[in-house]
Length: 308
Image 1: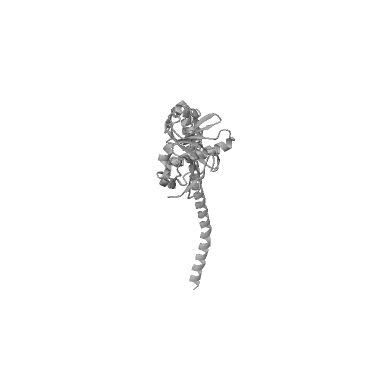
Image 2 (image 1 turned 90 degrees about the vertical axis):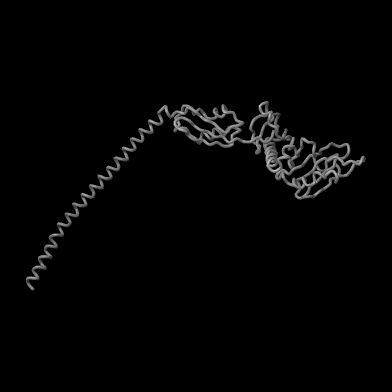
């Protein structure tokens, strides 16, 4: 028993003696591990710094190299706007470094051109800027303050109407002379929008339109080039009742009153503004063919027709 007890005591003594040695080993290992981590961090920092310096040198070389100066601005998609005018809108990007050109600013500069609706831009290395233009489409001709303008379907002015635009054959928007500018713009927009809507839904009718009168704020007065009756269209819904009108148009004269000679009376205007109703206003004999309103002088009782 005594011998066994001595062995246990010796083992316990050895255990406590070894404990101090284990602490020293662990501390040494921690120091070595910390040193390795610090060396690893230092190596990573050195790599990052090296990459930064190399990148900076590459960047400086790129933005200062004449190889990457803009030499060409390639513009495509323009049919109406002149290329020379669009290049002038580019703000002198030629000879600037291609990487320092602000493409968004270039896009906004080009969109200031009256014909330009939208623009896409891209760099084509080493020295070309590619520009693709989407243009506005002309829709009508408007006269205001003694000047005639070509406008698109929103009433946006594209250019003055001159010899270069004489090939365009669009309806003329009239009746805004003398109006305040804000009201004239509002009515021109309504007229141009009606032309666009008619061109899309009723292309045959749109091709026959000669003039749209805008003198009265609650209607659009559509005059056709083929001598067909004056149409009153709704300002907000110019397509209203056109289906019904087309359904009865060919047989319309048979449903009108007759004059003293037995012939159908002339039509002053056909009003399509009221939902579900086509109103035909015959002209009184000797009165003008058109009138400014339903009860205007020289206009007889109206015949209200409905049809689909």
